[in-house]
Amino acid sequence: MAEKMQAMVLTKLAPIETRPLKLMSIDKPTIKGRMELILEIEACGVCRSNLHLIEGDWKKYGAPSSLPVIPGHEVVGVVKKLGDGVKKVKAGDRVGIQPLFSSCLQCDYCTSGRENLCESAEITGETVQGGYAEYISALEEFVTPIPDNFDSAHAAPLFCPGITAYKAVKASEPAAGKRVGIFGIGGVGHLAIQIAKIYGARVLATSRTRKHIDLSKKVGADNAIAYQDSDVQFLKNLTEEEGLLDSAIVFAPSDRVIDVAIRSVKKAGIVVLAVRGKVADFPTFEEKIIKGSVIGTRKDMADLVKMASSPGLQVIIEKHRLAEANEVLGRLKKSEVEARAVLIP
Ligand SMILES: [Zn+2]
Ligand SMILES: [Zn+2]
Image (tube, rainbow, N blue to C red; front, side, top):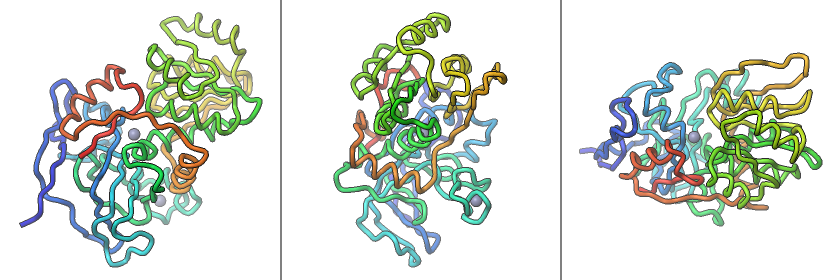
């Protein structure tokens, strides 16, 4: 008989208030391929994407690809079993899995260091089983080792908010003397502020809630301006306090915030969108540049883990039990989580 594990399983897409994730005892994953690993999970971050997936917002994008599914895509665990072709990791190593579970490694994107764009990518917790569980399978080529100075609960958020922030901040071309605005502060934004600071930029943070304005200051934003309901008031405050920005990065899933971010940058400035949303009015004659950004590559992941341990990133977390996933996602929906909630099986 197969060995069992506990997992929070999604069998039906539904609002989080109806507690759609059920704690179940299911078969543990087993090694099926030569390059596979089985990890005993030590921590899995709770992402807003998980909420979109569970509530059916992303059905139109094909996620999840099937049900039942175990959500969760920022996972840290210890290697317990490995296929006989695995060379780079050994039993007992601590590694992380990011949303990009695997890619084909053969297409133009994959062979040019842009495997996050691969058409046949598998996404952790969406097209393959994710990390709201005690065990998970992974592939040698797509895991990243965790340095000893990072405990698993603090390392887990590096694997989605961290890499998302890192890639988007790089796309904003931060440098000393540049003003970068971060729109939307939380799991991703609080890391993006710190990464942009490491590049030497002046960082302006903005969010709707007082809690997230305070968080921005705590992690080193040079200025934080609340974005309430008036775009006009926000833009007035911004121009008075900072002047227009060189670049803006949007992590808040709101068409209105995207619009305000575009209006917050100088002519020829850069706007990085790391969320799905609509660009209502593209100011062609201002020569602004709008870039999309999605998670990151294996190299981005390794570079970020290095950056996170030295000079160091302050990853702010709160810990919860696996069985509390519905409640935690409910709080995330209401913007009650300060930075990142992490499930500990
Ligand atoms: Zn995520
Ligand atoms: Zn590919």
